[in-house]
Image (cartoon, rainbow, N blue to C red; front, side, top):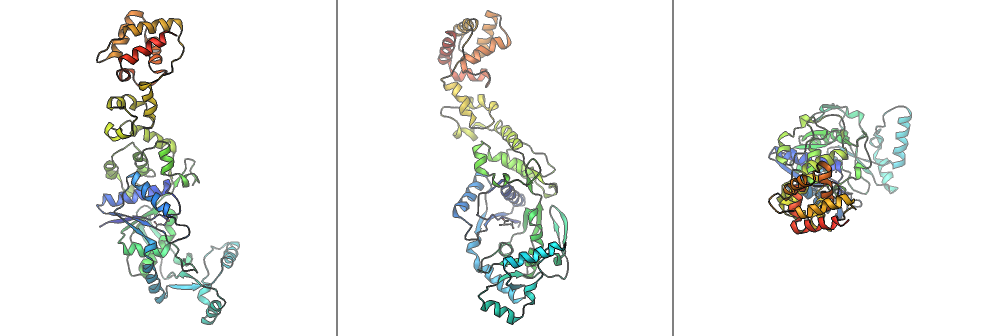
Length: 442
Ligand code: GLU
């Protein structure tokens, strides 16, 4: 059974990049009839906040991305300790005592010589006595995972194809700090094994972590999951942007963006499939395929999101939006204003044209006379607008804008707006006549 996971650290709100990763993992699981897990990576007790855990759950729920299970790393520490002891016994983790400054200096020296800043394994050279001396000085070690330099690390990446790393070109990663706290690498591998995760889809910034983690899986006696790394999300200008890093569900909601629009855009952004206003998740799932993912960065463009959103709003059936519409707005009201909306919230603005009061412009004497004629000609039927405009056309000889615009202005106070044929029945006979009369009085 396919098992995927989304593993955010609750150190902030979800941003559009995380949302995309969550969505793709969820789609991957759904398409395979599998399970999608939410794993809260909260090993960093200082930076992790409960309010962010809540916010992550709420944002996913709003987006319609529902996890089939939730796990928290903070409750799984015993497992990491156990794996750590296993690796230690196998000689795959070792203590290191360098300070941050010493490490920085080593880096600078290597970079200065034009060499890659790979950790020199200085700590492996320490004798037992030297180590004991460090400890006696009160220096607690941090811990590194010892990479096996024996053979290249390779995997078939679901997006990037065959990947190959020379482990000697990688630093032995620090997996545990001197205070005993964990860095992300080992707990993540332990959890992927323990939770039976079969596919890991994440950003390409994790590619070299994957190389390291593949050795961790092996050292822990398990085969690695299938890995896939998608190209990162960038702004329209093609660069990683700070703004995208903080653009999340709150900002989308505030702008009237529907979750379906975010899903439709992110499901296909960066793939060879066209971004389309597809409101049914089933239709998006049907075409979702890692083989369509490109290597070039996926460009996120607000204008594109707004276009998708508008197109989806124009498709939404009344039942889906009814509880978000202004008081009194029925199905006919929704249909009248729907084509004019960019967001559902705008329905309230257009609805005010029906409920009033409307602010009419000043009319010329000629238009006043015309509107007075209109007030008298108004007769109620299934199609009062059609009847009114044909009667006035005949009586006054007006046509086009001259015929329609003063009526629209008098009836709604606006120069443009929803179709009058749909709006007038909603305004109602009495109100319509009153508005025409008021307008005719200049
Ligand atoms: N918590 C890690 C992150 O947010 C998880 C990465 C992963 O998917 O393995 O970067």
